Image (spheres, rainbow, N blue to C red):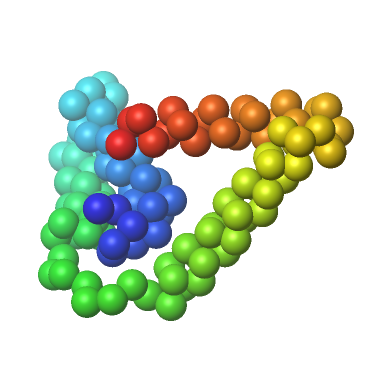
Length: 113
């Protein structure tokens, strides 16, 4: 999975860059010379080399990834407690709406897995 090797945000950014470069390769602008095409091929190869599938397995997550996951878990816990307060009527109506929206987004994300 993406998060096992590099942070998911970095992985997604690299995937988007790879797609952009592939699209450019499929439809090169008129007048593009061999040198420009060679540069495109080089950038594509570099993007592929950075993807986790092309590297060996990593034995344990990096400290940065562990810290990021820890912070994410704390944020999720905080949001869940805020949501509980909102459901109990102890929170501003706007905050309650936002938290319900976050919960819906989380459910949609889980359904997509």
